[in-house]
Image 1 (cartoon, rainbow, N blue to C red):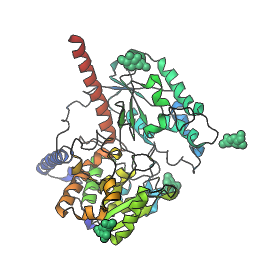
Image 2 (cartoon, helix red, strand yellow; image 1 turned 180 degrees about the horizontal axis):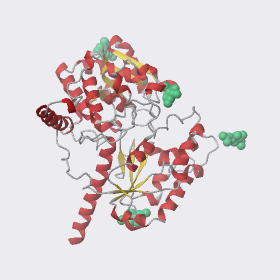
Image 3 (cartoon, protein in one colour; image 1 turned 30 degrees about the horizontal axis):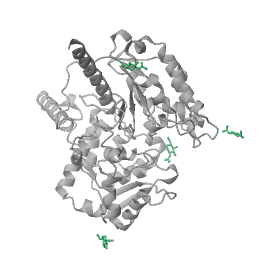
Image 4 (spheres, helix red, strand yellow; image 1 turned 120 degrees about the vertical axis):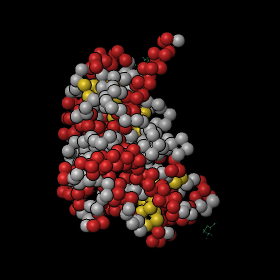
Length: 457
Ligand SMILES: *[C@@H]1O[C@H](CO)[C@@H](O)[C@H](O)[C@H]1NC(C)=O
Ligand SMILES: *[C@@H]1O[C@H](CO)[C@@H](O)[C@H](O)[C@H]1NC(C)=O
Ligand SMILES: *[C@@H]1O[C@H](CO)[C@@H](O)[C@H](O)[C@H]1NC(C)=O
Ligand SMILES: *[C@@H]1O[C@H](CO)[C@@H](O)[C@H](O)[C@H]1NC(C)=O
């Protein structure tokens, strides 16, 4: 398997001469800097917990572990037990989906899982419990994490025909009742508290009695608490969008380097790929229009039909498609965001977006914004497509080979930030979890500083 030789990782440093070791050490540092800090976002901190410590509430199991145990009948579809196992990562693909074999270098297969797109709450909790900046002493903490699996709590009531608004709210209400008896919550009015919600924000924003979802985020006791979720309300500063979990959960920084080399140098046979299902019930459905374009582009485009929930786990078909495509089309789905954006970028494919709210107004801690969006994505105005005969194929064919390479390199550099590692990656490399945690702590530090200045003025 010569084509899978990776120059970046020194395999057996203990057998190498000291000088070589030193040089490799330096080059690893350099690579880390090049990969992660092409534009410096933050500097390495010599003491990792300088930004503060986090206290994790020890909630009654009814608010988290017990919810996983209902996995057999959590929704009308097949059991979610496997998907919610090995805390939130799901089954390793080596056991569950043999089609992955041959798609990628064999040792990287071990970092791929059949991960459920709504498993964030479990994944995050597990990482937080094992984090070096966790403290068991609330008086030492500068942030408080509430490990309530709200998404899992409301899920059984989202599709059950007999469920009432009360059913969808009751676990959230009990949690808030519990929280009100905690002195840290009282002390700060919830300002230094945060929670992860594994579903989109709209599932927690029911404003009328019999509408969809729970009204968790409209409950007064939640107003000051920061929520990390896979899709935010762009007009609520307390909502912070974090990546959807994909199937890639690297075990170490070297896993990530290998994967980056692999996707960067891969021969891509297709100009663009599209994973999705048309909504036959919708008139003028944009996804149908894209499927049409794809068909007309012949061998320049490949699509995977995702109807009937076929793409719920990062399946081999979708990853194979993204690994093969220079670009991937990312229209909005039922909501503005989709897991597919992350499957695409993790595979080194450049996303083509049609709604600003699908990514630009969402993942601000993760994806370069403020005018830098064209460095890692292509935006096509959907109105132009409908009215001015603009075609995706023509737009993409108009991008020079050199520019395509630049786009891909930028996307590949972002990969570590977009994935949830199974454990801390080490070597100073931050994954999506680290970025979220650092972001929370930085925000709180800023807030405390502003408050201090406010009182002295
Ligand atoms: C919903 O209610 C109907 C009628 O009251 C009942 O027959 C049915 O079993 C209920 N379904 C569930 C899932 O509880
Ligand atoms: C949220 O914070 C504001 C300002 O600190 C405070 O007035 C309000 O009571 C807080 N909300 C809750 C539910 O504690
Ligand atoms: C998703 O993964 C589970 C194993 O975790 C598997 O049983 C199921 O068939 C997969 N679903 C699809 C649609 O690939
Ligand atoms: C749209 O563009 C295609 C080729 O780019 C052309 O063949 C077709 O006639 C155009 N249609 C309209 C309505 O302008």
